[in-house]
Length: 461
View 1 (cartoon, helix red, strand yellow):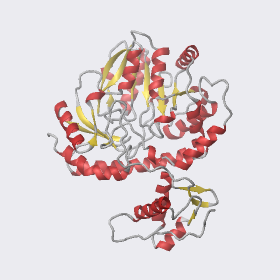
View 2: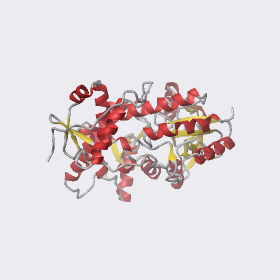
View 3: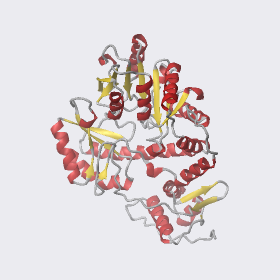
View 4: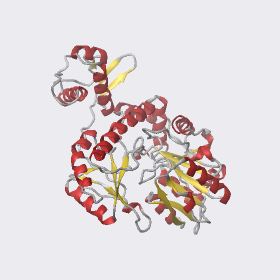
């Protein structure tokens, strides 16, 4: 039976250098894992606990927020806060999540770009969404464009978080960004067509185009994003990531966005907008998405991979009517559909407000990690690029040899980093280290920060 008259085993040390909220969260977590707290036990309110411990409510609220995010406790509307009936499986701080093209060792701490903060998902909300999704009746025939309720939820998400006013019937469900590129290459483009792609850029997209027989040509990227003036003539499409360029981290300036869409209209090519990290901005207001500027020539692609988890397999496409019709015709011919299971989970997360709460937590957590990492590197006189958005930053280097040397040095000291070289479709013309800060715990990031700074400090200037 649940207990509500619990004496919490908490002793806070105000002389310790550890924040009180962290001490409190650790004590409650230990009590739950050690059996002093049992599933269903009701915890005191943040106000009551703050009064009993003689701390501010900010301390108790922060501790509860952390435990809620980890899945140790759950809030029941109008009822209180309870210990979960089944605590989450402990996750090693040194768990490694490698990038799509990298193999890692359990002994390494991976600081790689493109990895989400999956450990920050509210486990109770996650379980609740999957249970609700499982309650939906099985589909006899899957919707070729995606579940209506999913397309409606995505339209609302795009309006609230990206400023894109898209009607639900203009949204197509996809299995993610790469899957959407595969569909575009197969349905809208043809063998021999030329597509411009950022260089360096997202190599999975490059490979998807090439496998469809499309010829890929590089387009230069600098501190203002893709350079429209370097797009060669005769392209059928241009693929870019204007919100937070992958991997350099630059955002496309307003003037270049206008220049790009005006050129697309004048020359009759499509702009494929990969909204990579579009929801993750910190110290600057987001610029309008390209699809809002020119819905007639822009194909907007998004995914839940970075804001939730890539295992959900849910993404979206907003495109001109002709492109949408071609993609649906391809799906009918190929018999392919985006899985409705991940779509339904997204719907449930959005319906209950859990998605919005997670995004706020995600932005706050990553903003703090970004400040921690960028501040430490700046103090060590290590320059960084692309740190005003997303979940990674870049340290520019002088040469490819130095990139290889520092990657090897970091690995020797137990840290797996990413270099720019593998993000080039051709011969690399820039060198640097991409440092991701979402895939590990904050504690792990703090643990390896000194090693990371020491490694990058020895770069050649």
